[in-house]
Length: 175
Image (tube, rainbow, N blue to C red; front, top):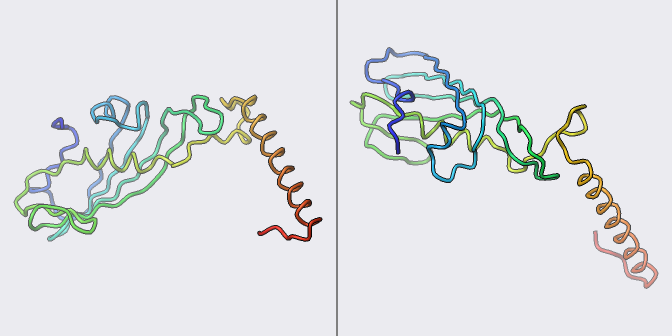
């Protein structure tokens, strides 16, 4: 992995208390990670560090948008992203356990890049769709959306017909 100098936070000499950091992540950042699901994005990540005697409490707020394809109509869209994530880092023997990262107490710097990447990826919704109904300039492919609506209505009609036929035979359809 690259060094990511701009995401290296000097924690050893840092005063106890709350510290604020802000990062802008673009496609250039995500291109540094193999097989990244995010290619083009404009994300602002606000990171709040609460440094304590025995631990570092990190709060990440990821906001912005990413370029992707709509899962409904397959058009290219700017998908809004807004999510919060927390990270607990404790001093101790290096490693991870139960979602807590452990670092030696004499660690001079803490690398945020992998966590910025991970939390950005976790912020992407499982289903990537655009809110077509509430946007006058929606990028959606309405021909595809109309076809999907038509197919859904036809499938619903077939289901009702089958239910009616089962009832005529004295069988009740399961619900």
